[in-house]
Amino acid sequence: MTKLALWALTGLLLSSCAQQTEKGDFTINAHIDNAPLGTIYLEELAVGEVKVVDTAVIKDASGKFTLKGMLPEQGLYRIRFGGTNSYIPLGLDAGTMSITGDYNELDKLKIDNSEATSEIQELLNEASQKDKALSAEMTVLDSLAKLKTPDSIMQPKIAAFKAKQDDFKNFFIKSISETKSPAVAAFSMSVLGPQILVSEPKLLDDVKKHFPENTLIASFTDKLKEPAAPQTASAGDVVEEPNMTTLKVGQTAPDFTLPDQSGKSVSLSSFKGKYVLVDFWASWCQPCRRENPNVVAAYNKFKGKNFTIVGVSLDKSKEAWDKAVEADGLTWTHVSDLQLWESKVVPLYGISSIPTNMLLDPQGKVVAIGLRGPALESKLQEVLQ
Image (cartoon, one colour):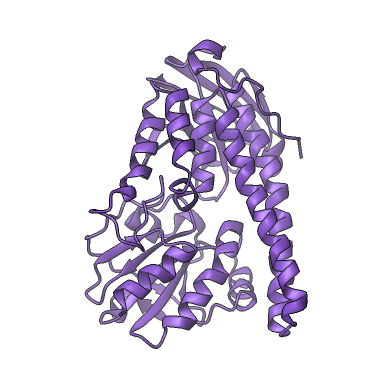
């Protein structure tokens, strides 16, 4: 893994330090060894939606493809390999950039002529190391909790774990504050998520001042500030995370039928009459696995109050799916067609990032989206009084 290289240009506006043209035509020339054959998608990551900008097809083992388009401004994009959960995040500028490397080592790609993309790659690599350390500690804590370890031993370990969580958060806050690229700032904001960002109003104000002309930053920060209005937000309400789902609060959740772990077909509509948390996750998704203890705690507290959970996994391997369900103590109903991002529920719900969840009322209407951490328990306490 490469070390993170943050820009030492704190406080300067983008217009005074950018070295690449943000607006205009762009070309991406890629050569990815061992890439799967099939369609490649270039997607723009806007607030609340994912837009396909261009496509290409890898027809042979050369792994070469070209993507083109026109940029109104620097933005956050990704190259998606169809039928997989593999992406290349991009901070896209006008001009010609090249990407070379191996599909099996996407964290080691060589990026030419895109400083923002290189910076995002370095952020991801550094964050991956921190994420692995957090996941390992979480596994240890879970094991100790199951053994009913005394508080005198548990509390220092929990405190150390929380300190590392804070370090992870501050790592991305620093990148938002110091980057010269609006795409990098937007990427770091999306990683942190709304639960953290809404508690950092000064950070939101500062990033908007740094990039006053960038519409992605403006729409992102404006959306995050919406819950602050007391007349429109209650204690358990949260912002819909960018690129989370196209479903909106107040809509009726589309019905679906998928196999459960035993192979039996289960329909979402069969749970009508209860409050249902539809939880999209996967065994390979570390943020999902980190969030699972919060979901377990909420389920155990409210399962006797006309509430249940339906876990929808975007897994490929049934063995990995089953192991994760057991390891994380997820004792509610789980369904999956084991098709990764090709699952039929992905376009049905407009899912483009996980973890994603939505709380449905007994009539099947969405009452909240993106309930993480204490927000989940708070919202359940509110609706299940």
